[in-house]
Length: 233
Image 1 (cartoon, rainbow, N blue to C red):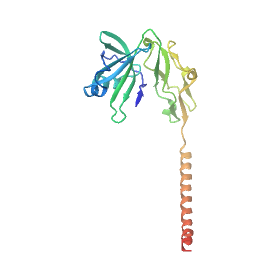
Image 2: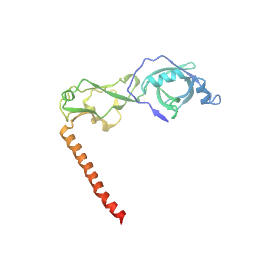
Image 3: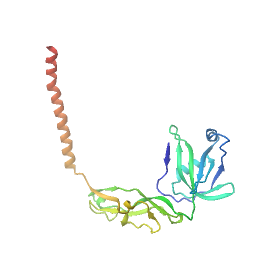
Image 4: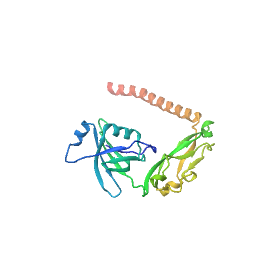
């Protein structure tokens, strides 16, 4: 089972990650995992790839803390480079890590990153019990260079005072260096306020359900004598 990691962005100043070269003709992956290593691969935009491995404790820390945009300082033999975690393959039964894929970053080239929206403040409509806040969009894909990404895009909800009010992507302060990948999402709603469901409506629905249940019970009681009569015949 493969999961693509796309949680909230976290630009961690993590220690240097040491990769070890892995010989495909050598020990099998099961043996490596038993010995405390996780098999992995690192590839780049040119489709060049290198089979590697890293110690299990480091791998677990990466999966726990790193995101798809956490910039890692990686070291392989005498080469140092920056990389990000792209995919993690888990055992579907034990949930243990079976394999990790890394992508080597070309700092001079644009890349696609998923930036989360971060809600700031308190919506008066919610505070005054006038409506419910619904987050329609959690994140958005943008294209930019590594040094241009930001941890999150802030959404100030303190101006949402009434049901029907909303905030769209084009209402937000998104850096010009970050190009939104999907044109349709440029005007998409990020958050909106919907009306509260009145207690009166909810009560009416409950009463209607009770009546239906009552009708069903009486039908069964009336049908019973008929069945008995048929049986006696």
